[in-house]
Length: 431
Image 1 (cartoon, helix red, strand yellow):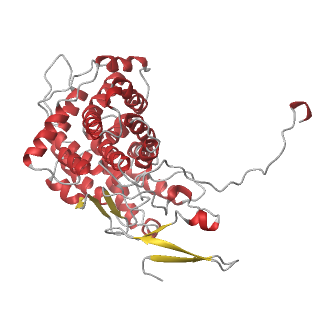
Image 2: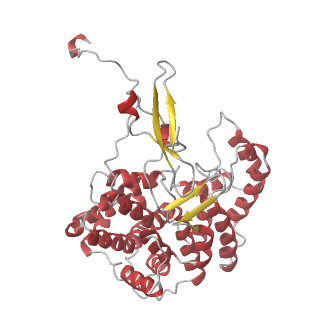
């Protein structure tokens, strides 16, 4: 048998089938099972797709055992130290780091597409004042195809570029409008002279009655968080974007679907859940009690921000954010943050506990990101929205890759049916 094939044998009949083995540039091989049903009449069963490669991709690679995350081959640690979010956006979209001229042109394009159609802006008035910002953002993004229907031909490369630039540019503006609506403040229009992160902070915290000077430390911290959240391979929301887009739906609908998926507390809502957990614990002297609760199988309480579906060692993003958290709180004069003190102590206790060590439950990116957002003055309800802003470029990159994939087809998972067998309808008078 060839090194690139796998022999599968039916234990009952003795029949054999040879499956091709496909190899990537790095990472584990995968079995190509597309012929399995035709050859054997069976499907595979993989709850949650934990062991299934749903597509071929050249964008992001994760090695969970080694704690490795790479965008287009570049380790995230190097990008976090040396790059900027807008440069990372170019890298994810185009596959290579830009030249000086390419970066300047791309940056300028994004800066000059930040404004919202005034009619779109009025959509926010239709939401109740206490609506969750993620509900508003998902709804408004979904509406964008009604405003830009003339450039939504998914098979037109120029339309795909216009969509990519437009959604990247307008996501911060949409997010800021959602925030302003929740606090009943006037909308702050974007400024083309500001960088991506500075413009977002300006739109969040600027008011018409006085000048607002964006804090350099805050902008740098936000840019770093956006780099670390830009993409993460075939996660729930990215897979949702790919699945929605595989039907040929317009790209704004696909991104809106990704936003909805991201909202869940097990995904993008995890950093919000971490802050809620820390507030529930309340003080350092309560940590042992809550750690014991987390270890109790009969107790529904769990420590949010520990462990990861993919990383079985450490989350490389968490290491970077932990250092940034110290820096930000120090430079903003908030080192006395009780939540940060509580988080540090909780991390220290958990990392020494045999239960967490055995299960490899290390702090993940969500454990510290919420603390930084809180230090920047961003309310907890906006944490997942911030995640969505950063992840948009990843969603768009995967959507673009999926659209031009020659092997692409509409996503249609199968199932193991365990419901009733065929039965006849009984009239209501005889039930």
